[in-house]
Length: 492
Image 1 (cartoon, one colour):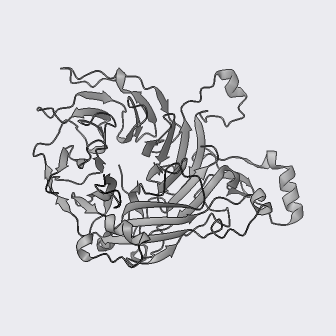
Image 2 (cartoon, one colour):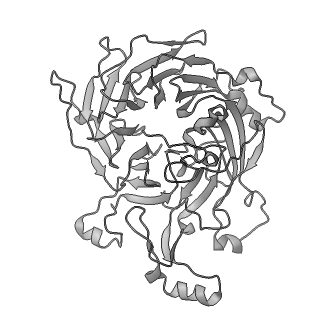
């Protein structure tokens, strides 16, 4: 998984790969900031689903001409496949979104995670509120400005519709401005990957303990307790002490930096698996005394860097790893040999990301450097044999729609046919694997040539690196890139 280059513009350095870095908007630890919500009033931003059309002036005659010629002038614009003609500009279709917001942070974030809250499940009311944690990638000359950001997004209103204006009420909450509140934990290194985990609360009157594990560019794994920071958003006057900003533990077993980290969803006391660029994988467990112990013997076998790790959602001793050697391996922590039980060649390029379905646990999705993402049935994978050549099973589904590396893939938390995919072509796409069209039906869909019928939605977003579904707000997707985007579509 490649990092974005980060050099200071003022010093004449190279900007972020393919784009500009957001202006420094440093927030103090307790500062409340507003969203840079470029979608709220105007729909001419690049960070959204887009269509190509003739640029029109806002006079009534021109607007009438545009409406009359809409079936001619407007067409679906596919990033990386279509080019704008002279005089054409990109404009979004706001009617396809139920919610759409964007916000900037002091520095871009390579990774983030959504924090489950006590506001209820299956939330469909607006304005929405959510909590998240992220790690920054500061300029290489200003590494001491890196931070772990604990965030609260509130006032996330839904898109305004014509019928909304007709039925408009004086409900101030519905028209509330989006707000970003942030608590910062100082770091001295870029966060390559961050994941959060909540320990079950022993007392129902108290919030669960929320832990984060950060894989840093310095090769360390930092474990923080961010419970006080989350509490401070909703209890005025809460003070975060310097001691509460310090990590509970700093793990130094890795000899190189890494991007792979995951908490076990089935070990309620806290269990962590981490991997590095040397191909080593370590398992760390929280002890009864609230300390942390790491197995001295790593799991080895990959000939390239470990790019992604995920625990099985159904087997507490099993995890999977994806590597730049093009393979995915499945491991059992009880193995005395520390070798993989299954090894499958899923790509001829780096396998950057993967996602294990929580609903149908024999399904695994992978994303590779060649832009292909695929779905695999683990029941078809055979145990390793004495042969040194990895097995090459056939995927259940495979898509080469994206023309740049896949940077994130995640199954919908409650629907085993819906998948979100982010890629280096600046798009975040939503897919429905349940859609199956034969040749005759495909001719009648009116779709764009070369676009799979399973593709539900394309959201344009500069340098998108990671995406997650919100587990408590159905259909809500959050992505990180040059900015954070929070959106919910009409189609999901």
